[in-house]
Image 1: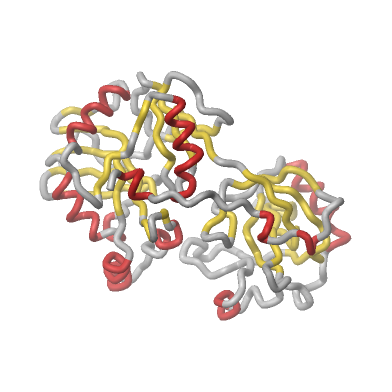
Image 2: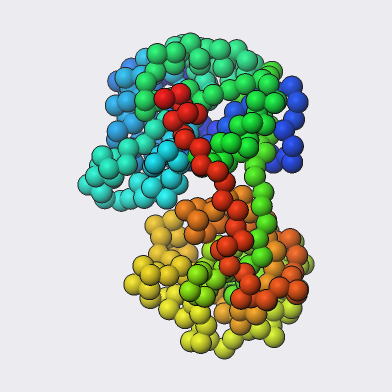
Length: 354
């Protein structure tokens, strides 16, 4: 492979802002695996956000990208999987599997798509120093005849259109809006774009915590919600605390600390078989590897309010939640899934143009 921009390349990133900024190019924020595709004739490599190859996990995309991308190019985009007109991140994570036979089986059952939104090189020309508007024009021409599963991400310079997308596209599983300055050069691994994400709040039960990697202070709070049967289900964590606050939380939560998890609602957390019928902390995952998943059980008597982006399959927070405040006015039993807002469904095919 001999391209003007060679792998590995870490993608350009975005910083969070509260409102859609004016005077920019706007795109939907896709909820998938960020990927940079390098093609040099018959050679093709799919690089991840960390720079490591994703190629072996998406064999169906290798052929599709080779057939639909220019002969020599470097394209930034997102790998996604859709089910029933909505993005499915769980199906995507299943692809990161050590067994090639399993990967190929899933490639047939739940094929992935690639949504392109930036161009880093074309032919013999590197485009890192080319303004965004010119890169976008080149990308649009390069993918003018592309067919599924390769798509050109919709883009607009109209902030009112972006606001409509922000409201409606969430129903198809998208994350929000990305705003890019029109004269922006491509800056690998730098947060020079802007993202506006949905934020909702929920009152949740604090049922335990994990220690921080630096020592005996709180690393993350383990959060739960009661299902229709009254069972406390693990729905995620909140973890962004200043170091001083992490130490204070150990003392603050000490009166709730249990000697063991034997009488805790999540007592079966260490049994792999138990995760099939309940949502418990410490679920086995190829992402966790050898990470210590042990936790300190607390009597599930304290409630806090957290902010979150959206729920994954209605079962857990897709990303780490953000602590807002304690809620002494709420009882743990009142913290149920019923309080969660469900976005109106929107067909992903309408976004991708088919």
